[in-house]
Length: 75
Image (cartoon, rainbow, N blue to C red; front, top):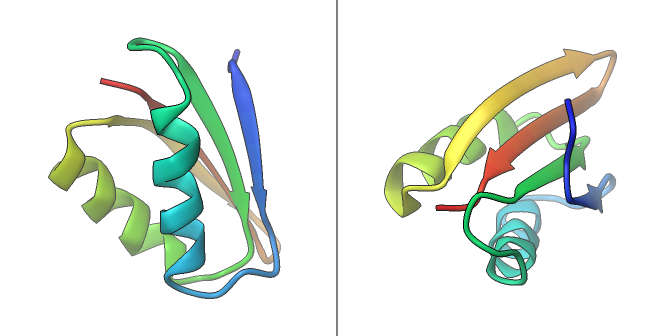
């Protein structure tokens, strides 16, 4: 998937992946896509809840080993 910016949140524990995701999304324009890579298993539920609460669209999420990748589209 194409994306405009990437955030490496590997090694960060809750709530830091969400805090950094919010900051990174605020730096994007509406319609741009942020790729987030995290290792915190709690980020799966957190990203889903974050997207629902903020209106930013969670386009895709995947897991490979202990790494979680998310694509969020800025509202």
